[in-house]
Length: 344
Image (cartoon, rainbow, N blue to C red; front, side, top):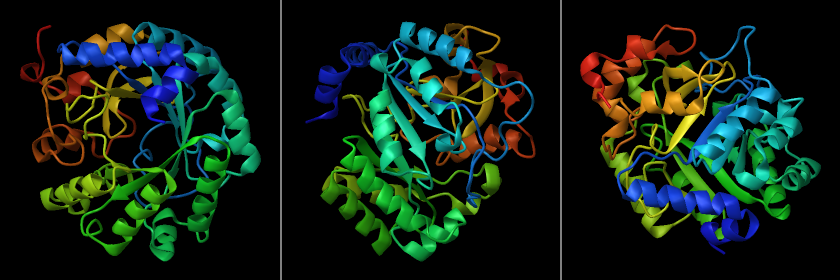
């Protein structure tokens, strides 16, 4: 059964919001589909490419009560998806309370994990709490390469085991994989696509970004040819996805601000996880007001078929480079000039 039909049957309110989202975007109006929530950044791995290593910390952090309010405001804004990530969500002592605070009956909920702590009981528990999908990180279908990237021997096998357990629990299964220059057109990539397609999984390709542990590393950015290869793979294997591919019947390219936003553990709202510019803070301002500010940014509102953070060299050089060497996100005033903003 297709994703919209499953959503219609299991979470009708989320389905209604997804349909409203599609209609708004088709009319050229602003709409938001997803909030990616990094409630905590604690992690049990030390991946060499972690994008979140410069985020988080400090005494001011989100609480469960804040999540309840964010969820209510998100529902009013028409948001129909939450993606919980970190760090490692399965380490959160109050993960169950966070999920309940979101109100699963109103949203499609994904938990993104490295699968180190994922077992049969955890998968079943998350299913019972109202989680719909588990995304597991797997950077290569080659065991040695994956474990080297993730910094822990044996994590490859834990991920494969976790994927089976998630499917067994009746949850949707997604594989997140980082695409690096020189590592796209490989036998392992083809094998990963075939594996996902055969098992009814989705594999989401996330192009490398020059932030976090790879700050300033332009050499890891994929080429247009490699991006084209991923697109070709998706035509043969529909399980292959990228965030810039058409979704909900809409082909709008980069989804920064106009499809998803990202909230840090400190409450800063970013246009996406990979653009470390704070549009505002949900601990200080209503979500709706922050979204209005973000929609004024020309880079975010104007259609771009490429990922701003990974493929648009102009944006990377002009905006993302300003975040280099900084701990935490920079503010809008530091990131954007007056000419970068629409008046309304």
